[in-house]
Length: 553
Image (tube, rainbow, N blue to C red):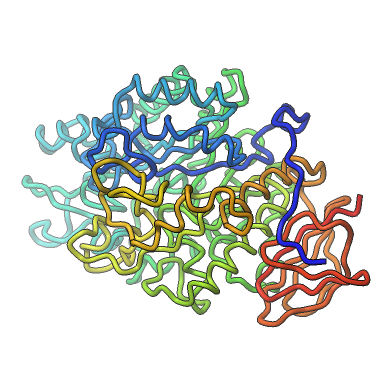
């Protein structure tokens, strides 16, 4: 018997789909609005474009849509520099467009999660503009981190902190004082010790909750509180320490009181609204602190994202994740790609150990095969899963963008992040033809490779061997299988070296991360496989870089 993938799609009104605590096993789809769909032909994606494509997301089988920032912004860092948290940037539309998107999503059975950026604002935010204009002593400077410099004439930064984007984390204004920005100079950090900052963000939360959003993804959730006195770190190449060491500007314990206050607001609203933390921490155990019962609901699992395609390493991070989340009663989350890292189809095409921003295409056939297998493994794990737009098409990173078209601010700075995030932000292809393969009528803000025509939604729809149909089937099976989705444990099964095998009730998942085929027991009725699997006489031959799902029912 030879079979690639098979499933019977469930009705969308299954009991599982209707139960409470939807976020414990939700599949959440990240939309990067400028690169998803362009409704007006200006080359830039917008909210109306997203709204028109919502039926595609419903049919894909996801539960919620997370929208990257669309607020009013000078776009120094792709909208993560917010000038007005209660307005939509004109490039994306207006508040009526946001309202229509939220309403249409709800009508289609999709929940809407919006990005919130509380660590920093734009330097064009009214508070910051007034703080600079009013000069030293302005009360508004206390809402940010303004400090006198060191040195005889204050010519040196107040401390040795480095920007995540490279260079000092301080910029000097004309009157001689310096302000802190952990990211670009156009992104000054708020001072969360000032009560006005907390008051403002509690008001912002209510504004969007009243608009009907179902939750917030909190950008840099680990960064709001800085160590008292802003002490020197005492080392260089600080960006290399991120997520690996204790930092005086990240993961300070004071952030948790902020989120307890926010949770009280969220719980006033009906409909199970949620918070999701982007929290880079030294350990999974530290990440678990953000999802205690009176704080946030989910936190991204960056340790899993950065794990190599290796059975031993994957098992270790899976076990540690489940063990860390179990005491706080929070669901694990699993993610392979997002708007800040090289797409996993390209990461897995390259040798391990190169990090999460990679400049080489690698072996694309190998990368896609591993990416498909990694997706089935991820969707089989207990908890919630995240999909980044275009990964369901098997899109690779675009690694050969010309310097003159790049827009990642980190690319133009001398150190810090590599600055190659543009490669994962290229607009996705919808059709085989057109100036931007269906993205819009007026081209796209970043150029798309010509080979993406055959990776488009149109080209893959109906092809049972395509990555798109694999995702559609996987999400349908995941919804139909009672043992998939929410949970806090797996039962590991004996398996050859390089192979992961686990049971969840009557469901079995086996992933071969090795370079050779292996023969294993056929655990039951084959539900789905990322590549062709041959079964005979109670055994299955599992090719390299392949994941298979069985049911014993």
